[in-house]
Length: 169
Image (cartoon, rainbow, N blue to C red):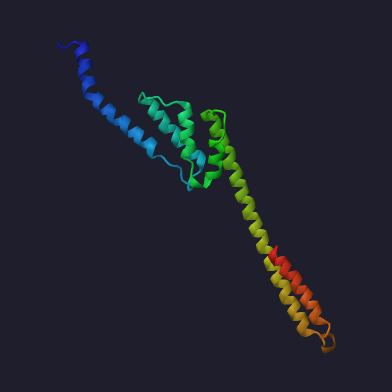
């Protein structure tokens, strides 16, 4: 009969080579991970945390300061200003604090995006109203009597100037 120690050693030899392969695979996932703008940053941070968990499960240790620096570097190019802000922080940051800051920044960006969409809609309404005013001014100037035509060019010029100002703003 084979004793337990010999059996354990044979199993270790058989599966230890596969263990080294899985470590390389997990490290490859970590190195290849990049954030994109098509997904929310928080969902991508969760993916990053899963990769870090897999690395830890394989018995490899990565320091927290390295994790924070790696996550900052993996932010998408649209976050360039925020990335530079985080890089210039003098105090060392924990991963949890970085994730909180990323959530806040993502929420701020979403609210700014909604506000800019709202302003664009408001500008569109102004343009429509101005177009209606201009057409009504042209109709009234055509319908007026010939005796008033001498005064009308000055009035319509002022009205068009103010209309033009509304379009610019």
